[in-house]
Image (cartoon, rainbow over all chains, first blue to last red; front, side):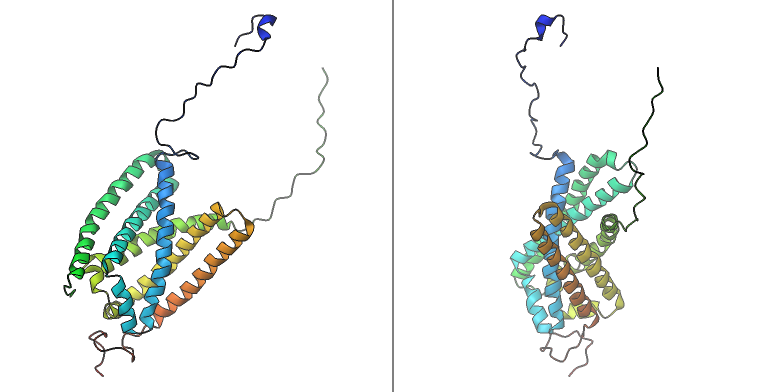
Length: 152
Length: 150
């Protein structure tokens, strides 16, 4: 504000700030957009996979007790609910792996950071292809198992 | 105009610190290198166990015995166990450091991660290398076909 004379030094009415809140869904604390949500999904899938891994090492270790004990445990993996759990696991691992490769490209490829948004779109597309390839097979196996078809 | 004089500093500059191992950097690098290995190891594991053939329906003791009849899957599963569990534990360590602000809580969680990781690495490795495809306590019809008939 230009000051022309001493008379204008009197307190001026405070103008209302003209900054508008962001219109799009952008999160509350962080920046939002692909950068933040890819990170959030990476954490959620990572923690989920980790806890599955702990259980999976323990259930596989039953193979050392006796064949019938191991078969009883692995039969639990063939129930419809666990079958859907395996589908969820593949969905989580698929995202975590593809986005992990995106992170590597951002960190080590000279133009990776500049194209992080494009890389995220590619990750999502490849993820959809992967899940579309696996889901029908898994659902078919769940149905065949529930109908009592022999596996071999 | 007089010449400005700059007073001598009150202390000499700090001697160079002893260079310590930057563990945080190596942990960061480990996540990326092990991640590349895990992409191959895990998708191979998932393909053979869930996607090919009858998927999860064909897994049983004899299936495992068949896989472990050659060193290929023994080496594969060992690499998978060590890479994956350390990768996961280091990721959980990062998350605990991010969110567990109370010192005692953080110590407890980090210790739990370390202990569970060591126990499961030892357990898993022992299971892989002491696996017996034809154990004496097997119930009828559970053994692979290559086992001697009792």
